[in-house]
Length: 90
Length: 249
Image (cartoon, rainbow over all chains, first blue to last red):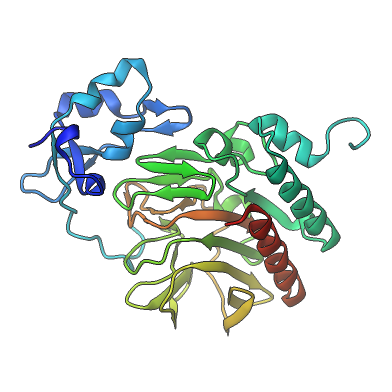
């Protein structure tokens, strides 16, 4: 894990912020900036981590959630892709 | 200024707070073109992505109210908003349009994008999965464009995802245009999705529940409309191109 300032320039989007489940629950449905909502997702590690993107961290201006700027950062590992052609799910 | 209130451009400017003269000029011309071509009344939602922030990009030019009922976008995940458009991060970014098939005529329907990013992958520009039917648009996945609209998928070779796309169903024919050129037309009969109330997402697929196939392509224009004739599609492309040219993007 590294901090935001340690990410080499141009490599920012290859990292995501690591969340605990409690932190994830706090962010769901919340705004990080005007008209922009957090979208915590699970990464492709096993077991999966809950993460948010660098963009959400960098653009957070909501005073209630400034703590996201101190989140540990980990390399982004995409989940195994869902079949892009899958049919109805329900 | 229209009698009894602001003209549509004025209403949009009031909603967004945009004061930039170039953007205002571009919007005035876009609106005039759409009216002249008889397209304004056929539009359901127009997202011109001007102003450079989520607070301006969210508005539907056709009905710029800050409500779900007006199909105002709600952005989730990591987006970068700028003067060139709205760029999702390809990790967890998408936008909810609040527009569902139940609010359109499923047999007369068009969707389009101006995409500024050339990338190859399972990145959906619009998507919705329901028991009533599956809808998706992958502009470039393995150098192939894939479309599905509540019926069988079809595909077209496409080695560059950038450009102005108009996907259109009218009179039982599905047409796909890129940069003003028809690249495929075929007879097409979608399932009746008129009762589907789940919304279309853009820059990802609404899996209902869940989201997948997050896109990494910058959008500089997106629209939903009724089905369009050949001339209407040509005129719409001309109008979008003029709009983008004025904005220098």
